[in-house]
Length: 92
Image (spheres, rainbow, N blue to C red):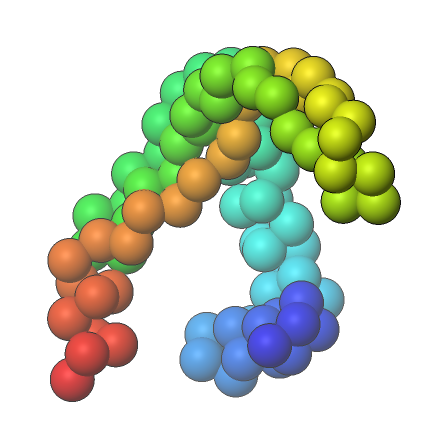
């Protein structure tokens, strides 16, 4: 499902117009981005949790030249952990 299909489904389920549903989805995504950037966690009980995790610096190999070692710097990565309600619904 892509963004346009998600907006159409949201509009269908909520009775909103596609334009309003897209505005709501964009506002949700922006709020999650801002919270993650600030180092906060976004918890939606029954659905899941958005958070960031630290990735340590490490060494990697270039697949074209396996002898060449490259340094991969430390970074933060956004992650989503599904909640119990979502897991239970999927596994019905």
